[in-house]
Image (cartoon, rainbow, N blue to C red; front, side, top):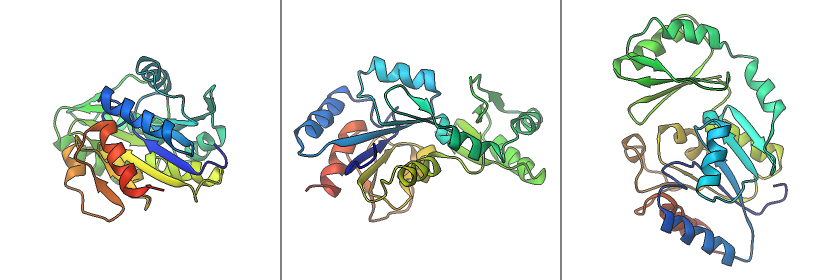
Length: 239
């Protein structure tokens, strides 16, 4: 990944994945370019689930895989965990406190996850989100709260998130000057879409992204999923 001149940092479900014809068109387009496009996948899935999706959809193996809404980072073809990132996050992370407070709120169903780096919930009553936010703040529990799709609530270490994970990767691997496109479709992508790099909100995005304020570095695609990435790449990076 070090030294890459072009990068695509993209969410998976509903962004890179979801339109098979559009995905093939995008990958074929990249194959025809005189440069190589490095891939960074940034997903809410945990590692095993993300790897299964990569296999099922026959996706190219990425240079880096960011999972669990930006709380876990894996690099290389064998997906080695970035221990430095993990140690950085764990300094201010108290999942036991988060769980205890969540039990006081009705309308939250905890997700069964194989990681301790986040706590995630299915929301059946949207009022529960603000109640939980207020309770976490009142108890001074360090956290980052992300609500997306009207039903998915993630409580993360405060220094994590998709945007912070992407920024960390770019800085650690000396990639800040690469031609980058960031792609997403839901609220948990907003942080990385607003880092100040060329970005695309794909045409099938969730309402919380479609109503986000306009910005010259955020392209609003007409096409869905990978087709929207193709649109945006040609908008920003026609060499």
